[in-house]
Amino acid sequence: MSCIAVVGSGLSGAVIARELAENGFDVIIYESREHIGGNCYSKRDEHTNVMVHTYGPHIFHTDDSEVWEYVNKFCTFMPYENRVKAVTGNRVFSLPINLLTINQFFNKTLTPNEAKDFIRSKGDSSIGEPLNFEEQALKFLGKELYEAFFKFYTIKQWGVSPTELPASILKRLPVRFNYNDNYFSHRYQGMPKDGYEVLFENLIDHPKITLHINTDFSQSMMESQFYEHVFYSGTIDGFFEHKLGRLGYRTLDFITERHHGDYQGCAVMNYCDNSVDYTRITEHKYFSPWEQHDDSIVYKEYSRACEEGDIPYYPVRMVKEKEMLVKYHTLASMLTNITFIGRLGTYRYLDMDVTIREALDTAKLFIQSRNGSNKMPVFVKEIL
Image (cartoon, rainbow, N blue to C red; front, side, top):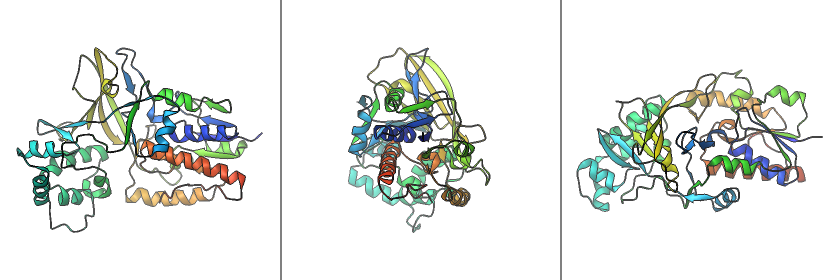
């Protein structure tokens, strides 16, 4: 009897599996790790009882009401707003850059309109259309704010000069001329009350879904077993056994510390100087402010290039990676009965809500393809 294979139990795989199961398909999930949820996985620390985001913080935020309603069907979300602090020059500021940040940094008491004019005067007007991250920052923020908050943090995070990164990265970072220090501006923001593991457990809790953990999936399994379709959320270069080379990813290392009481007084503290190697410290009990804990657990977060055996977090997508991606895209397009999904399968940076939206759309498209003559594409979204 034919069935659907879903490779990976992260957001993409779990949502697609659930949607197909509810529409009568038998689904097998193959998960290479010992737990479900991918990098969204969270669990309680046995020493402090704090809910820990095992692979770094995942804060849910979206303007997509359908996606918000969808995740709330499977677990209870509590209101949560991300208020990030940043250390630069031995001083603490609020991020994103807002009116308080500007006034503190420059020792001013500017009004919103005065601050707009002031920052405009700081910008490099000689730059026309910014060609990279650094030019974008210099044009719109000026040298002082750029070097204080973004230059060295970016080098630590991505491992390259900001001149080698696209200007579009900085466009995702807001600058506000009021005192709003909520990092995100989305309508819906929250955190699962009992952790992300509950969300994933409930997503795949269906009689037509079979889960295999600690089980790798390879291209040869497609040939030796009959699957009506495969949804693959692993790395696209890994699927092809890196025959054309390895795409560039960043991975994260965490140094864990436990402390009595509070450590830093907030969930996320960025370290923007090059005086320390880590990019930020996260204090996990602050991701669950509705809980009370006497002790605390923190992560010091280090970013580096992903090597063989590491967990990939972020696709780099620099020029050389895009050239290789085109070749892998060509190989993938020759296949049938497979769709590459998620951040790793499509080699794109995706927020959680976008990942869920694409998974819902992918499942719907597959169901429609089985009810009509439409062919299921290898990539639902253009990845090049």
